[in-house]
Length: 111
Length: 115
Image (tube, rainbow over all chains, first blue to last red):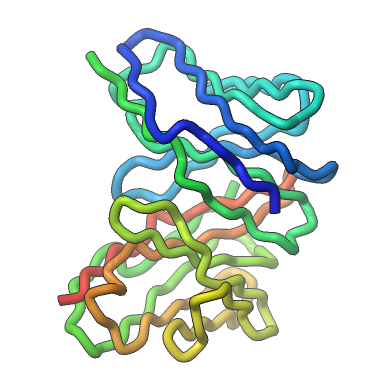
């Protein structure tokens, strides 16, 4: 399983763009990159998934360089409600290897 | 995506007792997973539950302590047996989907406190 490394914590002011980078040097050819958001006392919520280049949805953008050894989750104009733990995971689509969670990045948005 | 309902959402349990957590999904799924999240920690996979076969447990988790049932493609249960305060955690049910890539979705979790 590809291991991921993220910053333990980040702080941001409201209205700023936040970029959280994840390293996954051992990513395999069939692996996708998936990001989850978790609020206290709730289950993780799927944010975005990508394989290469850039993916954008209504919540975030995901940037993946050509070598796929890292990825960056970009949250535009964060608000206080974006304070949460963000997890980066890699896994293939075989279903044989369930996703393994690292420690995540605790984002604190300050007014 | 899938809608996942867990029961109970929260419970306080006596030491030495057992509690069964139910997980219901609004669509048929092949694979369901049970995770544990201890206070302030990340998620740890307990086991994978496939319909029609025995659950596959991760290192450190055993069937006697965490028996799992998977009677059909929309339902699973996890029992936490002979509980101790160290079992106080959030227990999360999740399912895999194959719409694009490989994504898992989570229920809201069952928060157990053992006293």
